[in-house]
Amino acid sequence: MAKPTKYATLICAILSVLLAIGILLGIILEIPWIVVLFLLPVVIYQVYRTEGRSTKWASWVMLIVIILELIFVIFKIDFNVAEFLGSEGEYVAGYYVQFGDLKILFPTLMAALAIILFVRTRGKYTKWLAVLIFIGALAIVYAVDPAGLKELLGFGVKEALYQL
Image (cartoon, rainbow, N blue to C red; front, top):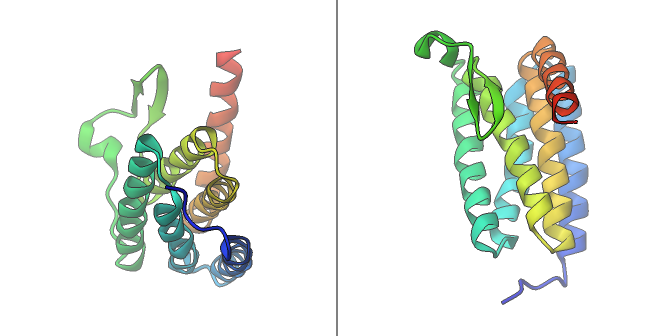
C-alpha cells in the first residue's frame, strides 16, 4: 500500500533545506560528521517511504552504511580496504571498484544505492530523497577528503566513457 503523501512535500522540502545547511556547516567547519548527521534523517525517511523489494533492501543497506559512516567519522577510524585485501580494486558486476578508506567507500556505496533507488522507484518523493542522498553522499566524500571526491568523479567519468 502506498505511503501517505499529505505531508511528504513539506517533509522533503524541510529535509532538503536541513541537508543543505548540514553540507555547508560540515564543509565550512571541516567537520565531516555534521554532513553525515544531517543526511541521516533523509535516509531514515527514505527507508520509511520505499515499498518495493529491491528499493526496500537498498534503503535498509543505506541506513546501515550511514550509521557505520557516522561511527567511523566520529571516532576517526581508518580502515584501508586496499591494504587489507592487498589489492587496489576488483571488477564487480562488470565495473571496476577501486578500494580505499572505508570513510570514502561507505558514501560511495550510498551514492550507488541512491542511483538504484532513483532508477527503480516510481514515487516522486522517493526519487527526491534519492537525489538528496546522492548529493549528500558526494558531500560526505568531499568533507572527509576533498581530493578523494576529485578522484572519485574522475574515476566515474572514465568508467562512463569506457561504457560508451
